[in-house]
Structures are given as structure tokens and as C-alpha cells.
Amino acid sequence: MSDSLTEKVEPALLAVRAVELLRGALLPVPGSTAPPPAPPTAPSSSGQPDGDGSTEASAGPEEGPGDTSVFLGPAILASPGGVPVTPHLLAGAAHRALGRLGLDLRLVIPTTAGQVSAATGAMKLRTLMMGAGATLELTEPGSAWTVLTGLGLGAAHLWYDGQALPPALAAAGTTWAFAPVGDLVVRHRLHPLLSLRGDGTITMLLPEPILRISGQEVASFGQPAMVLAVALEVHP
Image (cartoon, rainbow, N blue to C red; front, side):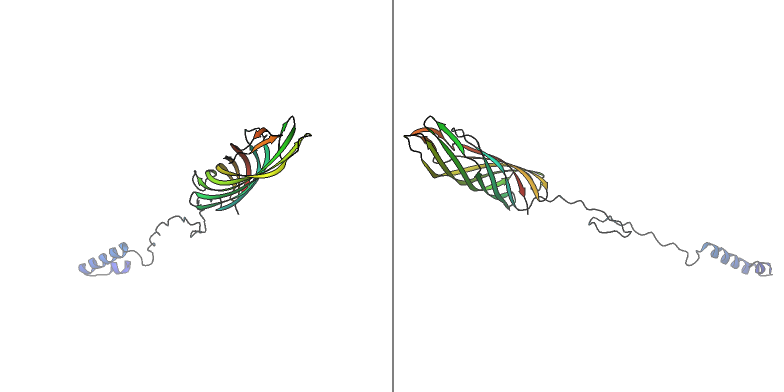
């Protein structure tokens, strides 16, 4: 290019060459254009790996207990009529049927007898209670702490065994009573498959059982009666 500038040329040709040189200096060299930057990508919310191999954990809601459960635990049965508090065993099953509504089945099984005494003898009483009812969950489903209330119908089977001093005769037998129940349950989830629950049940036995020794009334039972229990609940 320097040799061509030293030759004798026409002024017009020299001007054209100068314009061409200036144009070549200003135009970009082919192939040197940088590619446009890639648009930013939104972070993945599904927990799948991104383009660079990183993974974002998705925090979903914690799962609540299953729809069906079984429970078992120690209990006490108490009534103000004169029969002492007796230890029992609570066993049952629960099922969440629709939303906050559920069904509940339970047995209150006697482990020892309550005894009342008089001058002419004594009487032992064992009480088996069974019932079924509907429950309503008062707290949000899936919460770690759950409060339920319920109403139901049940029955009580009572065994009595009398001991009398001569010449009185001892009596023994069984009887049944109708038992409408009201329940309150507080449950704490320890694990998705395991909960600890506290149960309070109140009932009225109809007709009221009356305990008599030698024809004299020494105690009554079941108006009202209360069951208090602590149980482990398993959600299969």
C-alpha cells in the first residue's frame, strides 16, 4: 500500500483509495463478532439439576398423618359414686373420612377390679367399655399438634363379684348399660408414622349401676364416668 501511494497517480484516484483505506479500517473483521449474551434462566423449582449441574431443593408442605390409624395405651376409669379409680387399657382405631371429619372406634379394657366394702361384706367391679363415634378436627390438617372432639354411642359391660359374711349370701353376675360418650383428643406427631395422643372421654351409664351388699346400697357407678388415657398412635 505504501508503494502505491508513491506512484504518480491522478488526484481523483488518490482520493478514492484514501476512502477505501478509511472504510477498511472502520469495518469489523469477518468472524470476530462476539455472540450475544444468553438470556438469564429462571431458577429451577422442581428440584431437577440446572444446566450447570446444580440442584435446588424444593421445600414442600410437611405431610400429615395417614388417613387410618390404630392406638394403644394405659388409661384410668373414674366415677364419683364410691367405686375407686381403676387402671384400664385403651385400644382403638381412627379413620379420617372426609376433610376434618373422621370415625373412631375404641375399647376400654379393665386390668384390675375396683372394690367397695361394708360391714357385712365387699364387692368387686370390673367394667369393659366400647364405643364408636364421629370426630371433628379443630386444627389445620397436617399440623404437628392436633385437637379433635367427638360424639358417639357405646355400651358398658360390668362384672360384679360379691363377698358376704354369714349368714348373708354372696352374689355375682354381669349387667349391661347404655353409654353415650363425648371425647376430646390432643395429639402430637412425633414422626409421619407415629403420634402421641391424650384422650379424655366422659359418659353416662344408663341405667345407673347400683352396688348393694346384704341389700344395702354401698356405691353407684357411671353417672358420670370419665376415662383418661395416654396412647401411642400408629399411622400405617
